[in-house]
Length: 124
Image (cartoon, rainbow, N blue to C red; front, side, top):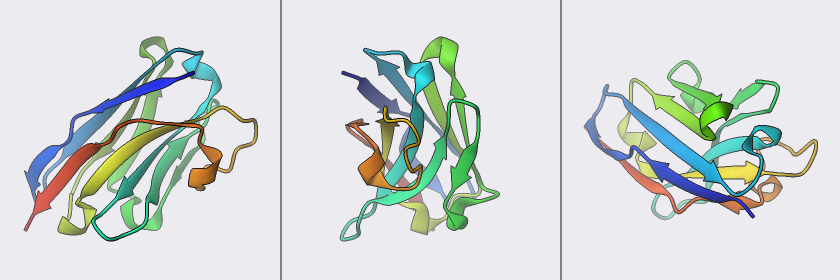
């Protein structure tokens, strides 16, 4: 079992920055693929970014160059640094953990555990 707790969401003006954190507990964090997803009202959950054990990173095209995913295995924490935020980035952001080997980073079906989500609101 893995427990994930996100923090760092909030209200920010367009062009601003936020850093989301996700602390994992319960199993060996360093062995797993970690991802961030988001869901806006009335829309499906969308892949945002993921990072593998070896450090390979993946991003949805709309956030490339603006968002950076990172992980600190010593702290069991994954981060999402979000810069140049836009109103269309407004959503609930979820942290997720995939324990299966060779999990597809962009598919929500790959992930076994999810956090409760943190709201990010970007005003224009």
